Image (cartoon, rainbow, N blue to C red; front, side):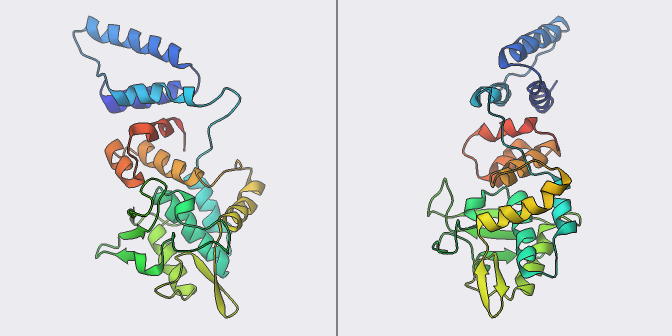
Length: 253
């Protein structure tokens, strides 16, 4: 068994077993390998995942991830002739595929300074239609800036198509906050509360779980890991400084 397979196996065990039980299972698996003169990989990643449940009190469940099904519901049920809804979809797909913290993209209120958040100038495309967004401020780098990457995906959850449509429909100016939307003759910044409330208006009737802003980052990492993207690539995309993100491997999409 290779490291990738073992990480997925341990992540699946976490749904039903405690870390101590998982250690016993791994010991048995190692003994089985040794009986056939084969070596079972040891790695810090496997241990990180095995310890994941210890980070949560028994009474507290880990935050739920955003899933592709939830994003598809947004794309289907938001009004894509409405300026605000167009901004909401663009931000949702950017946060998910860019593995972003919502606080790196949206202010808490309209009165917050927008200097911390990307503008239209911070968005660029390469010849293959991949996009990069320069983040002026992040939780870990502070004002040292960071970059998040977006690549084309299948409809209806393609972030490139959504962000191109949003910036054109809402007539963003170069210095406009990236997720502003037009109201009458002015532009208003999309805020975290307005964004999350609108998402829940779509998801609640469909019986999707209540989520938080961080659920987009969790969902993006979970989806990429489940799709077989190398952990080092996911770590780079999400700008993690450690392997702590591997605990998201236990979430099913």
